[in-house]
Amino acid sequence: QVQLVESGGGLVQAGGSLRLSCAASGSTLGINSMGWYRQAPGKQRDLVAVITTGRNTNYADSVKGRFTISRDNAKNTVYLQMNSLKPEDTAVYYCNAKRIIGIVVDYWGQGTQVTVSS
Image 1 (cartoon, rainbow, N blue to C red):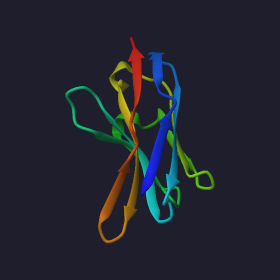
Image 2 (cartoon, helix red, strand yellow):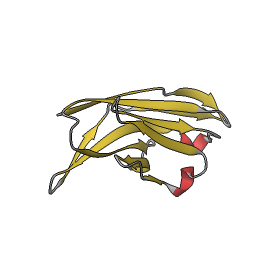
Image 3 (spheres, rainbow, N blue to C red):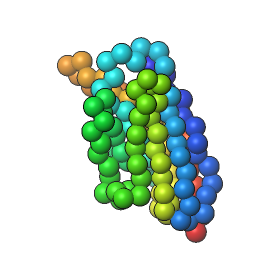
Image 4 (cartoon, rainbow, N blue to C red):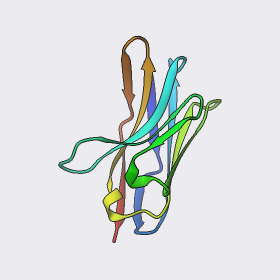
């Protein structure tokens, strides 16, 4: 099992910045990628950004140029630097880790609230 603990959410004004962190523990060997998803009230959970162990990254179009994902493999930690935040970025942000062993096994954090006021 893999445990994911997020931190760094909060309330910020539009145009501001926040940095989310997600620390993984447990059976982290073999984790292929880590990333962030978000879910706004009444909406589905969507990918925000993902980074592989080789540090290849992928971003949702809505956050390109504003958010940056990074990881510290030695600390099993992934970060999401969020700049130029907009009210539409308001959501619960979930950390995700994927292990691909023939099938994809997903692990999720408990979520952290990000609220951007206009």
